[in-house]
Image 1 (tube, rainbow, N blue to C red):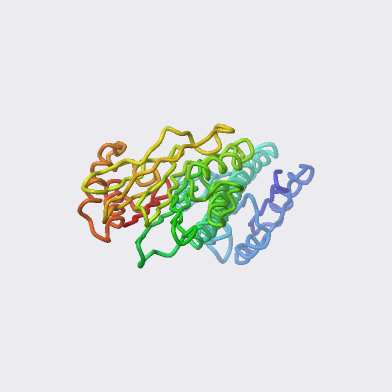
Image 2: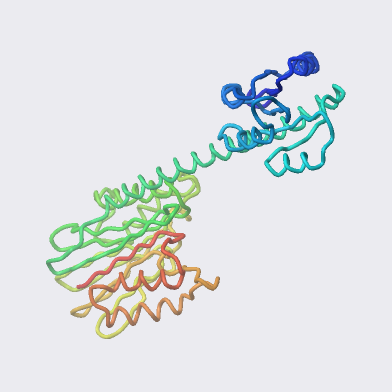
Length: 387
């Protein structure tokens, strides 16, 4: 048998001659273990210790009613699903019906020919063994899923530990919200002062889901945070993204690539330089106008030796920037339809002009309302930056 499971027959009958007859029937059958229990009061303990794949049980025994013993076997955790064949000295439809109603699987008038006894033993045992194997496979699958969920939870906590603290003072204020998906995708974002005159702001999204995508996101973010983008000037977004493209080609990253929006703000001139590599357009509300900060460049890692462009825009006093991942807008609504990009842009444009500090929370609540559930299928990442 698979996994070393053997056919194990437990016979419960007060007649020794019946026990001997059945023993002889299966004695020369390979792979069948046999145990005889002449005392019905000891039957449950015997079954718990022997773990049979089929139980043969007499219905007429002293000191205990055979149908009551059927109840006991079905109430016992070890034998609740074990095939049970009741034995009777004659064909009695009423007794047979009661036995089946109580959970018996089969009925034999004892004792039929050896061929029939062995055939029924094998038939019921093999079905039960397959059930045990399926149950074990399901148990192992559930355990694997629990381990994967725990691994994803640890990865999500690690990613969250790397995210920056909100900026609550100085010439720039920044807040954010990150809600990892149930599978953990590859979102990562941050901001830091390159020097006293330049603030870097970025959000990237690695393709795929799982720990591999999260680790690539962390690796790219570490390069940005450490300012180790080779000879690239960290104040030049196009140069930084060009260097990232050289470092993280998808053929060296298990086929993974990432989109990124990377910007550098210079308070002295109120200028925002930025580069967008395949990422959703950042939204800028400045001087009463809404700007989409996008570009035509592909994602990082898709095209080798590609130069990326830096664009610059001057910000009005009180300008507000919203940078986000596609998990904030590519939402399947409760009615099964996808939320349109146009509706997303209309809503966020209005929110940028009118909402207060709770802009991101309001959008998160709205998104969950559209989906009709709390969990996201992709990471939800959004940065709200005020200048």
